[in-house]
Amino acid sequence: MATRSLLTVPLLLTAAAAAVAWIAFGPAAALAFAALAVLEIAMAADSSVPMAGIAGRLHSPARRLFLSLGIVAGVLAMRLLLPPAAVAVGGATDPATAVDEAVFAPGSFSAHLAEVRPALAAFGAAFIWLVFAEYLFNTDRLTRRSWLGGLEARLARVARPRVWSVVTAATGVLVTTVLVGQQDAWAPGTVLPVALGGAAGVTAYLTSKRIARWALRGVDGTGTGAVGTRGSWRIHVYASTVVFERGLVVFMLFEILDGVYSLSGSGLLGADGLGALEQAALAVAAIAVGAVFLARTTSRLDQAATLKRLRYLKAGAAYVLGVLAVLLWTSLLVPVPGAVVAWFGTVVIGLALATSLPWRAWARRLRRRTVAG
Image (cartoon, rainbow, N blue to C red; front, side, top):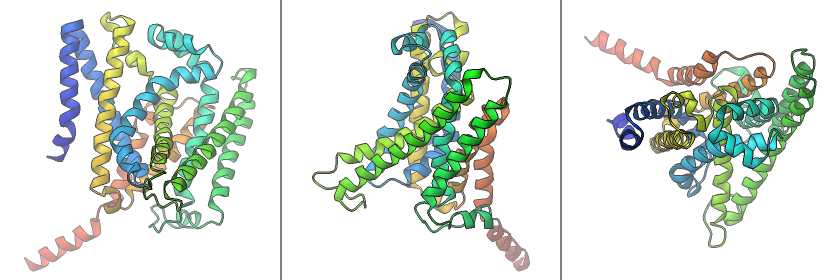
């Protein structure tokens, strides 16, 4: 019943948009859109647990804003606006040309995105590692049970956890830069973009966290998240930093690591003879369907306190980010197999879920029933 209720709105949106596509562009376009929407829903399901973990760190009403509008707006903005912005910032082309290519010339856009990919991957790896390090070094000093045993428990008790977070991220940037510099296969101009991208990732994370702390302190002057008469608008600023954090993760996973470019419809729509604007419109609609499903799933996980009842699921969500950061760094050195990109999140979350289930309690109940019988 719960699964059906979660899927009701996304599937109704998919059916309505597919009907419009059928009337406007024909049955092939409708079927291609439906396939793309289902793919977006599947990718959203894989992201919902990490997103719920991020939502759990928010105070109300920032959490309500994040779960209702923030997720949908963040996914749309990051998936649609960040790729052209990244190409423009990377210097491959100017902003207007980047937007034009993303819609009308996805092949050229993909080539330009590949040019700036080393710097973007280094940026994302450093940023996402720092997000993961919040859990690894327990920067909020929360009481929790370690998922991976004694080593994780010791790391969660280190002194000055924020310093450790920055040091480990900087180490990752340095090591990757040195290894990239030793590879003959890379062009001579790659080392500097990787180094600068990693440094920019650390800087962006620290800036985002400083803005978040400033916004939250301004809510009531204490940092508790209670809404005051003057500071309630800062809730929007605080929530926007979280939307940026997760949106960047989605962008790095799909556009940079997996090569799934948003406005090209992942190649599903190009074979149907559609124009560039029609392909872009259907791709945007499919992304919106996935964003709605992601928001509904994340909200349901948050309302049901699933991450609290399944004690290791939050750890699994954090380790998904850690593995993603490592994969981004690795992708600068060697190609990462598509199967790893597609399944690593599911495997990590699945292991966390399996270890969270009360297997021993179920076994004790079964033994008691067997003895009683």
